[in-house]
Image (cartoon, rainbow, N blue to C red; front, side, top):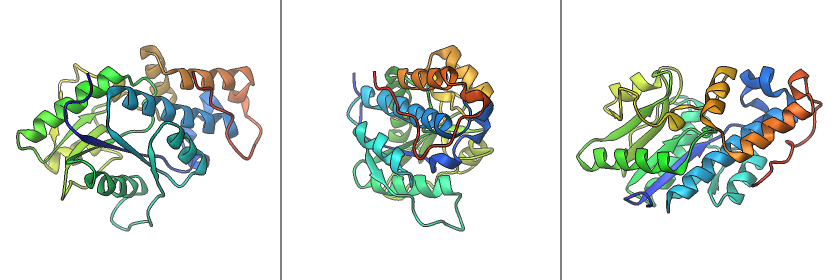
Length: 241
């Protein structure tokens, strides 16, 4: 069944050349790291699309990310002008949330590197957030697997909470009045496992990553990218299964 209420979803991705440098020991440099980041985005978008009819927007300055998003059926927004008040990630998400709030009463900001995400998890978590908000909460969030970061933040327009993704974001969202969903961390491991480090990637692989991420990682291994890939103008192609 699709998500129970009209919802808009927002994701943000930085320029691929600057993304996920901590994964270099595992996936290599250059095109293979960029391809892995783009593949994780594509698998995240596929899970969201499979969850039901939600309007999805990706905010990014990167033309390749915008292409991947468009091929997945998502709308695309350019990254906004830098803000002194917000980090680039939160400024991008706030920009996307403002756009989403014109389309749906509830807007959900989700990490873009949820390589193990599946549709059932998206539906369950979003429905739980909608239920809490419909009961009167200003916002709701799901912490990441460490308990310190944020995997998902659901806000309500027309005056949505400002996103506070980044280090210690779970505490920041909680302090701002967002209700934590499943604070005992008994549910949704696929949602909680965003991939920033080799340990994160190992956790996602143990859960089972999506087909595009698997293909990108296989390509990195097959070419010896972990020992340093050669530079190219664009990422290695993503295999769409």
